Length: 325
Image 1 (spheres, helix red, strand yellow):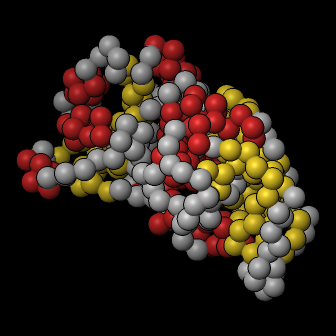
Image 2 (image 1 turned 30 degrees about the horizontal axis):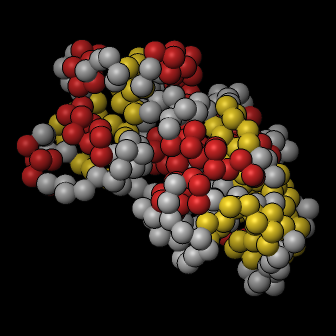
C-alpha cells in the first residue's frame, strides 16, 4: 500500500483527501517511482476545481516530482531500478509516495541536483525554458514584461532573463514582492497594487512598450497586457491564475498594433523524450552553474496538501512549494 492524495468531486481544497492505495505495478513502457519530493503548481488547482477535466473521478493530483525508480515495465530500456529521475508531465498522481507513469515523461537527474530542488523546479523551470528560449529566444538588451515576477515561474524567469542579458520588468502585487523580484534579477518592477502598469511600462521603455509580454494571470490582466505589447509584438498567455481568458476579439489585435498572441503549454514543446531531456539538461546546467538559484519557500507533508493549495491560490507563497511524502 502507498499513501496518495485524491479527490472524488470538484471543489475547493477541502475536497482533497489522503488515502491508502494499492501499489500499481508498471505496465508496458511504464516505471514506478518512489517519490522523494513532489512539486505543487497552480495547474493542480485547475484540475481540482474542474477548470481542467481529469480523465475520471476519483482522481490523483499533480504531475511533478523527483525520486528513484523502483520498478520498470516491459519494453523500458532507457531507465532501470535505482535511477535518479524527475518528471513534470504525464498522468495525474504525483501527490503520493509512489507514482507509476510512462517512461517517456521521465528525465535523468544528475547527482548535482537534489530531489527537492528538482521537484521544486521541474515544471516551473521547463516552462521558463520554453518561454524564454523557444517561443521567443530572448536577446541581450531586450526589455520584456513578466507578470507575477515573484512567483514560482517568475522567480526563475527573473534569473534566467538576467543571465541572458535581457531586461525583465516584473509586475508584482506588493512592495515585498517587488524587492524579491529585484533581488532575483528583475531590471525593474511595477507594483500593480499602487502603480498603473501600462503607464509605468511606457515610462520604462521610453514609449516603445515591450516586444514580448508574459502573462500567467489571465482574465484580470488580459487587457493590460495587450496595452503593454509593442506593435507587431507578442503576448504569451500561459496561465489562468485569475480565471480563463474568454471572448477574445481578434480585431483588437489589429487595433493595438498587429499583435501576435499564443497560449502555449509545456507538453506542446516537450513533446518527445529527446526534446524533454534536452530542455531539462539546459535547466539543470543553469542550476549547477549557479546562474539559477532554486528557493523552496514552503514544505508540507502529503496530509497538508489542502492547506498548501489554499496558500498557493491565495498568492501567499514565494518561490516554490513542495510536498515531502
